[in-house]
Length: 472
Image 1 (cartoon, rainbow, N blue to C red):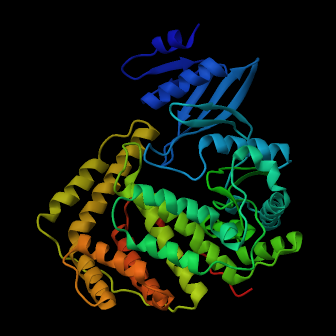
Image 2 (image 1 turned 90 degrees about the horizontal axis):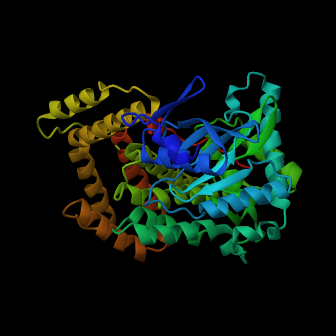
Image 3 (image 1 turned 120 degrees about the vertical axis):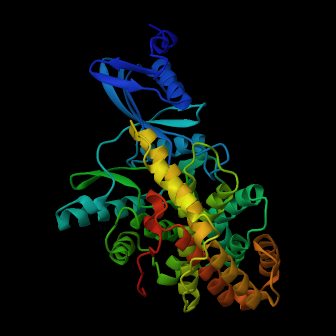
């Protein structure tokens, strides 16, 4: 039976079918396209389950050559999202890893529409904080560090098929990924956005001049699967580059906020022991600012050009949190003592019950399956965010305008004027203004963070700071 015949058997109202005792529900056009590709290219689809989360993806099982193969299909992040590494390059990275003895999932194919990477699902789970035994936890985390130290020793020629330019000199080694992400931001933002202009300038001014050796790195670090007390494979390479190995260590600070990695300073010590590379605190802070900046470059444009499949408040939470961490890393690097803004006060703009009612009404809607329930909760979070703007936005904007007036010497007429004039100021400001601009954007981001309180599953980032790295 061909794939069209099999899809033709599906009940039109729900696009569902039963294979053995397991129902397959194809609720969206993307589900149906993925099902069709798997059926035509890999074998009979026994299970296809979309992920109920901010990133599109599916778990699947197919019958292939008389065996059941477990798959993970890594889906797109929206037509408006541009990554420094595309799916073709990700596939090449997986192949290069396996050829060099670095554990990673095997690539079984690429789907053009929706643009997705089909991977063999490796065994294990992702969060080492779930390991009960302390010695086993330490062993798994140290094994991961040993794997990336081995990865950092591989010759760059091992990754020739990925198509990355080999960096030469301290600036290219430290800023290759950051500059590429800034270029994507330049193409997509379409408006003044002074925060990221400042980040870009600060990263250029503070390049560690003694770091000239490039390695293959994954800046979105700390992502691996484990089973028992052993690592089964590294995962998720869309933020990979040729760059400073310290950038991968710095990236572990971000991963630690959602999947705790324990004492990061101890893991850095272990990396130094197995690699022979010295990683001081100031270098970690520079690359923390750098990779957090990458997140800002990638995510802020989505606040103005979102697509239907994207979880708006999740992406906005990530943009605000990673930008906060970028600024606090700059402060730690430069020795700037930050002060906190006042907590925004309510200045309700009228009929605030309408917003509360909308949140309540959406939250009460049925969620018959995980994907629908996630979409409902995402809509409720967005309604809550809009309600918080109606309640606190006037006070937030007044504080933003006052801070900007204190910085540039004149008061903007509103938010758009503020962004335009502040960006002009940032672009001509020298390093003598760095401390004041770090403080300014810290306060702006703290207020943005406050507005996201309770807005969706990703709002766990509100008020959360990175693990402090002591002097090294």
